[in-house]
Image (tube, rainbow, N blue to C red; front, side, top):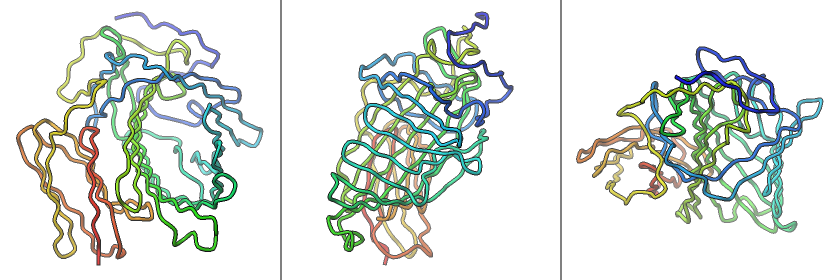
Length: 351
């Protein structure tokens, strides 16, 4: 086992705890923090639970670094700046919330703030919060944005950074954001204008002694009036040599049947499914040619996730799941299915 060593840093040392737990004191952005995130190949997140192993040793820097700066005023309001956008947030009732954003073409002000993080947060904790706001696009179009953020600390385990270096006591945080957007020149008719939907699944891996996630993956799927348009996957890693000290590395040989290995290429689609509706239920019958982790969502046209299922299927086997739609509003819904990072979707109507 290598000796505990201290990495060069401008941040203060954080005490190592027996169990990973995110707190505002240790993990909230500080004034004048500056970090660089390296773009990396997307990896599938694997399942949830305890004592998992995530192997990102095969992932390498993929170019397209992002430089991020944070500014925090005396009232606790903070500003996060990168080369594409500026986000404005504040800590309120133990929740970090975003109340505005702006980029080159768009500005949004949230009258119902957007949840970013909850403090403290440890394995098993979860929280959901609706958000909504108004803004402008290119200065002459009005935008209305509504949706739901669900946050959950869904897994703990060991993060493998290289063939010899591992970090134990890693906490993974899952953030699901479903959004509906409407835009029109005439603000009076914006509610009836064409809707666009987005579903973003984000996973962040936190290690003890480091303020920010050391690895993050994003899977963003966009829809136009419930019809899929595009799906984008990307990931970033935080170089530990420019991070917080007190990270413990070991040379232990780790092995687990619940590990997720990094891959630069997505596997071919080997998932097959059939969806049917009966009475107040939507059912899906699925089969997979490979071991697969499945996340299935039932999302309304207004960007609200009403039902969710997380399950797994072994190679060559079949599984099924269903959504109880009793009491749900009538209208159109997207059935969103994430299978090992591959996205499937289907539109259904509830009458």
